[in-house]
Image 1 (spheres, rainbow, N blue to C red):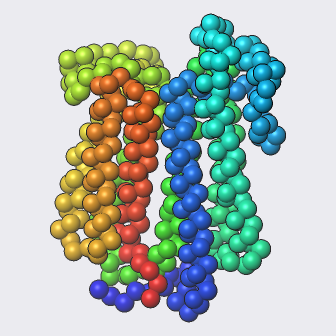
Image 2 (image 1 turned 135 degrees about the horizontal axis):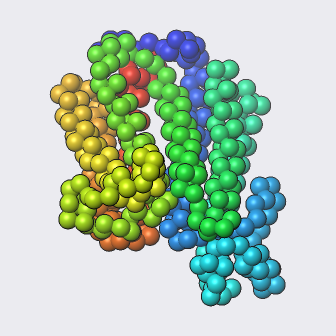
Image 3 (image 1 turned 90 degrees about the vertical axis):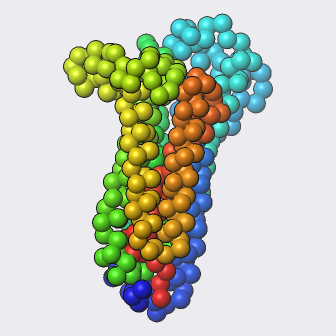
Length: 363
């Protein structure tokens, strides 16, 4: 193993212990933010699965944190909900008590979203005022904050699509909302890893170049698979063809390309959307064990070996959750766990990809 050298962007890391301490503190803060985003993604899935996402028909990004506090306020909130298509078309027999059961999920989702903004902004200002943030890191943190604001706007843009004539959220906006959340999570996690592993072992980086490329490809496929899951949720494709591995008794189902133009099938055709999600999952089922075996043949450091094992375990868990969710016709608990499993799989893949670039702690 060659001598670990400091990152070219941060040569002072090996000379200034306070920089290392500051970066570790910032990394812990970013990992806490990642945890809250992970919870937000799962809660968002529950909100979608329980049909709660359109229960709050007004969006007040700054005010409006308090929920209805008495019966009169609940009646007024319910009256507003009754003016929109979801009530008129789907829930016209709903009582105020039943309305509360869907309202609380969406309310919790929005409050957690605002909380994430506070959890990010206040420590950021503290670290900034105290001079603990390196100049090269500041633009990255500002980018995270801007993306978080855009995510809030995307959330309302998504909800707005279901407050018109058709009381269904657009699968395109839903998937964009999910995708942006995952991008923010992945970016934040990657920057945290850079802070925790600021050094570069040049020998390891060169030796693992091919594996690192393969790992990034796998990470990209995991992300695409998660996005395809967004389209599955968006058009409720998981409630059809609840058998595995066959769909309607076939490996390749009938009706894959019924819609015109052709591209619509990949986003709007229940058959094609579910088939594509299965196909991507199968691809990962083949690629990740093969990658794990190849990587294990090269003598990697212990933390990379642990990362590889976690990647394989996360794949097994996610496939089990996915198949169980399908054959049991999308129970809320399993479906939410499946969405969380996608993030765990992505996290393991991101960690392996990062470490295979020769990243290590500073000497």
